[in-house]
Length: 336
Image (cartoon, rainbow, N blue to C red; front, side, top):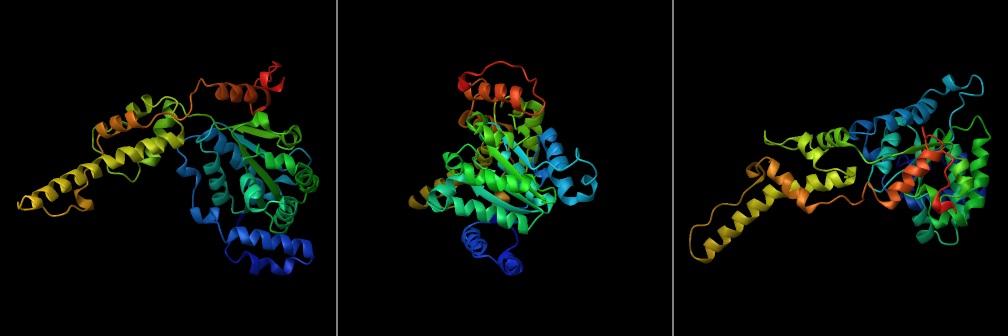
């Protein structure tokens, strides 16, 4: 999916001269018509209540080189990174981070969904990949966002992807970054891993960060004085950002459910020829209480376990290959 201004084709049409690029542009335009631009979503880093270290690193690696390229042109060591990997359990905020980068970096974004390539562009994946990199180069500064980097489609199109990727990696003047996400970094092809030198784990939030996430999610909600975000954070061990949002949504339905029950009682009164109360409106919805969150906690469980096999594999992979890992040379069972 092409992520940019709605007038992308008209604005940049004169830049494309070869038939192959025009063909690729048609492919990308077709996907754009079915999608919504990340820039239209308007997600910023302020909307992400935790992950401060990851956000700071992304600002340094992605936003600064794209916004201030003159600061990174002296010498070899400060050249912008051309490949970043975000990995972690599902629901931890990897895609939301990509949306925030798109909003704040002011760069054109092209979103590659590997499952979409398989289902919508069967037999044309190689042409699609070539078109993506061609367009990304033309509209630079740009970010190519690769979702589901471990998908089997990546393996099938690896050669085409690597050839085009190497084209931007070896050209210092190319202001194009590949930002990939995956739930299973240990399933990535080694060639892909080598081209993603900065690998950031997006982990499950601890209690203080869960409290920050809750404060962001509930910022526009009316809360009773007895709502204790710290207490909610402490009772949601192992919850991801997505789990916390589902918990809050479940709690928010409690006051509405009470109103509907009262209205049902009113309907019964009508059936019994008794005066019926008037319908309720938004002003009658009470603030959220602590009991609502306790009820929601009974309904919404953590979708993953912090001690699961997958979590242990992620931690081991991060320890060996991730940002800040200890690099302990311990063989992993899934590499054997």
